[in-house]
Image 1 (cartoon, protein in one colour):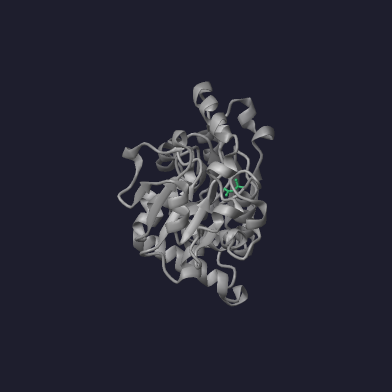
Image 2 (tube, rainbow, N blue to C red; image 1 turned 120 degrees about the vertical axis):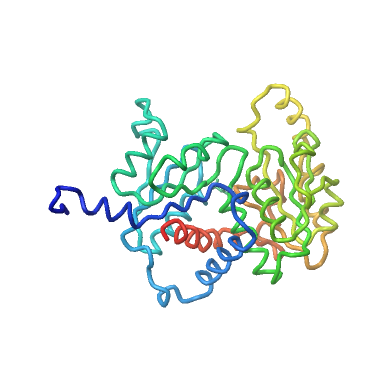
Length: 322
Ligand code: CP
């Protein structure tokens, strides 16, 4: 549509309607903002979606995943479609990034086409902070290296809150490759803001520097973490982020008999409190960090986490196109 000045009215409309509301990390959200997102996600989880309507009709949302994903990419796509939005899926291998186009130029191109939201997963832990102020669309961080995975932490805290009726005062054990995990980092920040304690555990070589721990977090043995926790969250070893041969060798040493030494075996799960529940952001490696039978066991909230991923991402997309 063209106005009398020859300007593209649709483009102007799009850029004036969109207030840029990035979600780069849990670190940028207050406790009140987290609770508001969880409350809205709960509405999407429990309400008859038809009675709420499709509030993002005509919004254009682009998924840009430079790293592998199943849950995050598809749940953003499902969330966007439930809200009535148009979804573009960007495939790096067949995009002009193959001809040297930068992420900044890609985003400026999408912005010029009237895209409202860019959902980005990539390996550089600092680049989204640099790009966000320079672009006219909302950026949602779908995982940036070992830095943050904010929507995962939101869906995890929503799952905990739904099950226990609160997050405040709970103990959450997070066990596995903590130092390479954006999920562990975002959860530590979210759980700190919501008043829960974090017990990190796993191979010593994969534990975070003490300086990176928030006040609510400490490192303990796997048995202690599992016996004390209300929630036992297992993480996989992220070999794809283990760069140096030295650390790889150290970790390979730890990897032998991993389930027995650090994982949630059926034997170790007997240490859990009666009311305690099992979580995992997935993908999981059955028989490595978790016994396969526990994934679908009565204590597992793992598939509830996946369902909640859609509701949380609906709330996050609404915030991004507000
Ligand atoms: N939990 C998670 O981020 O899964 P995907 O890598 O499949 O998106």
